[in-house]
Every structure is written in C-alpha cells, then in structure tokens.
Amino acid sequence: MSKGLRQSVLRGICLVCACTPSLAQSTVDEVVRITDSVGYEIDPQERARYSILPGYEGFILARFSIRGDRYYLRITHQREGRRLAEDILLSRGQFEAYRNQIVVIDQATRDRRQKEAATEVQKEGRFRMATDAFLYGSWLYGPGATILFEMEGNRAAGVQLLTVGGSFVAALSATRDYRLGYGRSNLIRWGNYAGTLYGLGIPVFFHSGSQKAYVGSAMLCTPLGGLLAYRLSSHRHFDKGETDLISTGGLVGGLYGLIIPFLIDIDDLEEPTQDRIHVASAMLGVPAGILATTRLIRHKPINRGRAHLITLGGIVGGYYGASIVRLAGVDGDRHPRPYVWSVALGLPVGTYFAYRLTDREEYTLGRSRLISVGAYAGALFGTGVVLAAGVEEIESHIMASVLGSATGIWFTHEVTRGWGEQVGSRFELRMPAQNRVIVSLPSPAQLLSFGILTRHHPSSSECAPLELLRISF
Image (tube, rainbow, N blue to C red; front, side):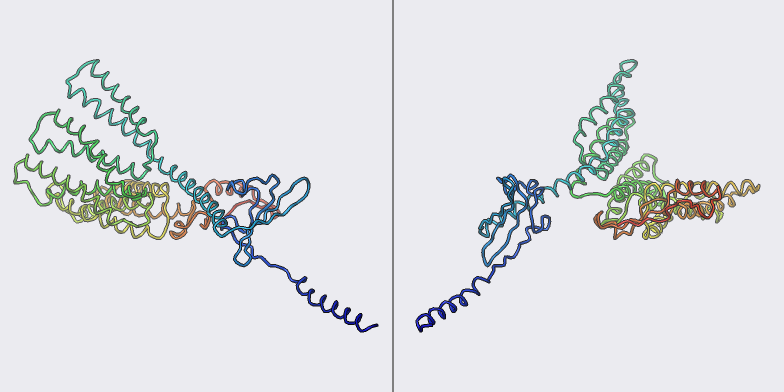
C-alpha cells in the first residue's frame, strides 16, 4: 500500500471514530405534570372536557415536556389510518396558558358542585315557613282583620278564609327561590313568635283594655320580629342543632324573666304594676337567653340529636329539682317559691350534665327522640308499679317516677346504640365524605330475620345469614 493511500485510510478511520459518539447521543425530555386532575397526559375525554387542543379529528393523547428552557407539546393523533406524532415548540407563557385553562375549568366545576350541594341544604325550611304563614293567617291575621274592622257574619267569615288562603299563596310566592336553609329559617320563625309575644305585651305598658290594641300590636310586631331575626342571622351560617338550642335558649330566657319578679316578691305592688314588671322582665329575658346560648355553644359540634338531648336534660333537671323539694316535705300551696327556685336551679344543672354526657357519642334526631320517649315511659312505668302495689303516698309516687325516668333514659340509650346507624367520631364527621370511616351495625329488620331463621334449627351445613359488622372507608 502506498504511503498516500495509507494516510487516506487513517484519516477516514479517524473521521468515523470522531463522528460515532455524536451519532449515538440522544435527547431526553422531562415530561411535565400538567395539573393534579389531569396528570401527565391529556386523553380524548379530558380534551373534550376542557375544550383544549382543537383541530385534531383523530386525537389520541397529548403531553407537555421540557428540554432545557424550552417547552414542547407532543400531540399524537390518527389520520387516514396512520398514527402521527407532532411536536410543537411552546414558550413558557403558552404552556402556562394551557395549564391555567384547565385550572379555571376545574375550579368552576368544583364551585358548581359545591353550589349545587349548598343549594339542596339551603332549600330546607321552606315547608315550615309556608305552614307558619298559613297558621298565622288562620289564628291571627284572619280573625285580627275582622276585629280591627268590626266585621261580622258571612263577611267576616269570608275575609278570614281569604286571609288564610292568601297568606299561604303569598308565602309560597315569596319563597319560590328559597335559599335560607333550616338554620336561618328556624331563627326567623322563632323571631316571628317572639314578635307576636312582644306585640301582645306592649299594650300592657299603656294600661290598654282594648282588644284592638292587642290584636293590632301583635299583627304589627310579628313580621318585625322575623325581619330582625333575618337581619341578625345574615352574617354567618347556622347549624341545625345550634339554632334549635338558640331558640330554646330564648324560650327559657323568657320563662326566667317571668319567674324572677315572682322570686324577688313583688306582691306588695299594685296588680297593673306587677303585670308590667313581669312583661318587661320576660321581654328582657328572651334576648338575654338567646345571647347567652349563642355564646356558650359557638364553635361546638352540636347536631339536632344532641341539641334535643340537652333540652331533655334541662327538663329532667327541673323536674328532679322540684321532686327533691316535694320529697323534703315542702307544701307547694303555702310555699310555692322553693319549687320555683328548685326548677330554676335544676334546669341549668340538668342541661350541663346532658351536655357533658353526650360529648362522646353521635346522636341522630330519631335516637334522641326515642330516648326522650324512654324518659317519659320510664316515669309512667315507675309510677304504675307503685300504684299497682297499692301505695298511696305521693312521695312514693314521685320517687318512683324519678327512678323510672332515669332508668328509662339509660335503657333506651343502651338499646338504641348502633341500631343500623352510621357511627363515627367527631373527627371523622369533619372529614370529607370520601375519607370518612363508616361503621354499620345490624338493623332491627336484620335481627328479626335472623331470629326467624334460627327458629328452624338449621343443621350444621346450614347458616343463618347475618351481617354483624360492616366497615366502609
């Protein structure tokens, strides 16, 4: 081989060796996560949902990648039986525009779903509002109109009937797009009731003996009370159990307002003065009870079932207080004030114990009502046992009713625990539904079916089906 040819071959080998590494090099792109909802790829369903990447009839998928400081969009689509991949160079602003379009649509979807769920909750309460309007037209505004305008006979009957029907129609029309929910509806209804009582009490301060004054004042103050409750409850959401206790607190405050003048002994004053003091004290007691209850239960997990039991605790506490005074031998006819004092002291004590004892379990409204019935049934049963035994002393009857009511509460509480109800801790109830653990126990129907099957004495090869426990999460 000549020297020139040998040099040419060596140059060629060197050139091939120099070019080989560059031919073996490959480019690696980082696939970018678009959003949490979409992930790394856009499929045909997501493309249609977000109205993104138009113009590709046979769209298969799309992904975003980054190479250095450059963004690329690779769209895979099908055309005339061939699968094609198209790479599009993007700026960072164009990539963020695609991402923001998806984020905005996701947020709009979440807002719409939350609004739909909230709307269903907000629709609650319309039935009670409409029926209250019907009842107010029946017993206040219908008869009140005939009294104010001194109507009689068929004309008065016709006006009353028109008022009743008109009140219902007006309530339905006014609540056509109802969005207040149970909580605010309950507060507004009790605001109406308070307005009625205030309206009936105002003429007392003016020594009015006119029936028109009482009727007209009640007709005027009723909607004012509802309007005031509407305005005062517009700043936040009120839970169902919270409003049940607030309304009960207002009622109890009014009752305390009535009994306080009696306890401080105003019998030496003239009767009209006593009436004005009682009315004024009750008027002050209603807002005081509402304010105190609102402050005490704010930010506390109280549903309707627990609120019902707290109210029951107050009633039972007042009854037990009066029973203790009677068992002590105090004559109620000659000394009524000890009884009133015992009820006034027993009510908050019973309420406090009911609040503390219901803190560790979840109570549905149905279960709480059964426990209330158990208290009354136990008191009746205990009294019945004493009467059937021929005991005539009233103290024995009272003791039997007290012990019976306590036994009835305990028995009903234990028997109704977990009867097909969904039970969870307070922490779990605050969690989203998809993250919540639900424990379901056998229902009464399942236990009855099990009892019927076991009566047939199945052999060892037969099994009576019964789901003892279900845990879902």
